[in-house]
Length: 558
Image 1 (cartoon, rainbow, N blue to C red):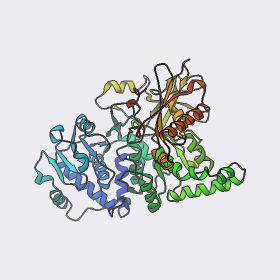
Image 2 (cartoon, rainbow, N blue to C red; image 1 turned 90 degrees about the horizontal axis):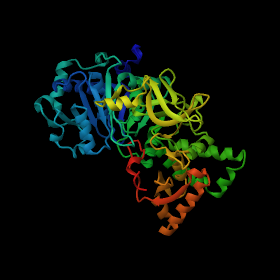
Image 3 (cartoon, rainbow, N blue to C red; image 1 turned 180 degrees about the vertical axis):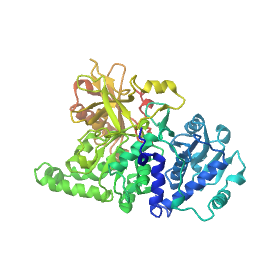
Image 4 (cartoon, rainbow, N blue to C red; image 1 turned 45 degrees about the horizontal axis):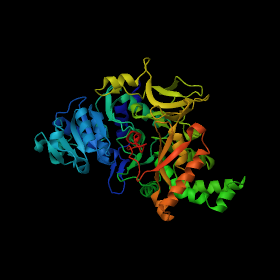
């Protein structure tokens, strides 16, 4: 447990607000809304008054659900600095899932965007005392006197409490040791029903500490925040680390298409970029692949020394596309396609891959560009913060990845059996991932324990590795490798219909292309990994907010 004053989670923000009072803190991208640290602190103080008027007590739960915006940030920080427990709900959750989370967490207040509220009825969340709009702070529903908690009433009480104004010297938050619970974050896993991760302030502080000490976040840093703040990855670094350091984050509330993001990167010129693989892979496929497949370029790339000139030009083009001023791009949330990673490594593009999970808020391992990360690895465990070991490794050194350290959860909310099952008898947290650690301490993830398949003679098959090869084939958007009862492997493929239409392919020609892809991929695989059948799927697979495919929805389709 981190007990030093400088790593106390609440005190880090108390200091940051005081020291950066007049500096910009958050901007709602695409609008003229920017809050300085001082304005952020004032809005937090007003919410503290609202919490008191609503009878919120220490360790009560406050839920927040909506797209990334400055009001979301205010609610999160107001809750944890008041002594309450924040319950972030991913805006992409269906109404029924959101209702379950609100009730299961016993949240007393709900801050929600107007569009997310449309699917919820008041009688479905009986324990909630008040529901407040994240759009403009208006009360949506009340089990209290509306005259006491409307915007004007809270403003009046703020002036009454601070007749001479509220300034940096007035920022004093609740004294909370890091052992107290900071959040209950419900997972968005690919294998079924979500669970409430109980995260002490210590776990949040451990991630922020690494963000600061590694230089990911620093005073004056610029972030473009397009990962959902309700997800642990974006929350820990785009938001919490940035504001603890005195940085400035632009919050993208729209669907993060490459077109929107590249425009934002060009305007903001971020100092570091946090992304999931899907975004980078799409940019690579649309911007880079067409160039390197042209005969002159493809030929030059095979010629020693000449290839360095082409690689340098491609790298510069890609760097400029992402704003031109970032020190590194950090990939998390899912594995980066190996072919994409290999090419980026070849052109010396500053990208590295980290590994984490909601249960670690989220970071477990990462190695910055400056320290020389190894290709295909997820870096080393965070020094002084996290430990990793491989449980019951096979002859190749592959086994379940288990972890322990500052960032780990204390368990699942109101789910003692799941909590017990998630830890080994000697206290290591089971990740459910298969991996290995090399002689230099670098971690490599091979796949999920639950998705690993067995070949006809008991060989281990990692479907994610095969899918990465399939996804690089022409006319393939994404794929899933599944196994029939007779152990034969089936590739469920969603074609890239934009590419198909652009080239005018008929259905028969598309089938031929998929068969060619199957043969090409099989030529790179061991006999027991061969794809026997290809089936086309009509649209993109359903995904979690971090863009991982919900595999459990498709296991019965073969």
